[in-house]
Length: 115
Image (cartoon, rainbow, N blue to C red; front, side, top):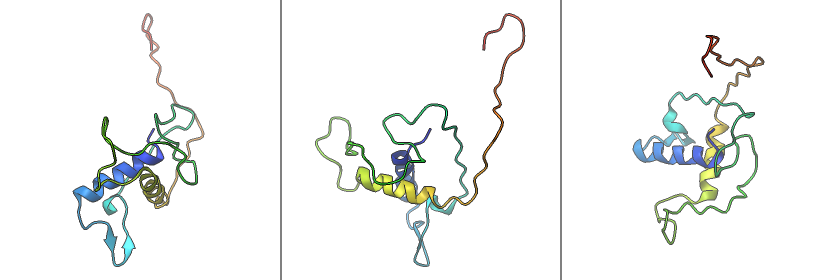
């Protein structure tokens, strides 16, 4: 699953790739104004090294968004707290949510086959 910080990283990369696609008539545009679908199952694996998307509030993580082995965060990179904030702002732009009420799992019913 994508966590709060990872969605902020995706937003950062979209803005970096689509320069100028962050504002439209003074309003903030997220994910480049592109149609986006998020899907997940909160009862499955939590994001690794990140906080779940449904969590509210500031990041409680200790990460500093610096490269592996690096001494500090690069000057053009967003801080972890900004990544989480931007991830939450992007998440909040989604207008529709579809909740599936029935669990669907694929199973292989052939004899001798293991799932």
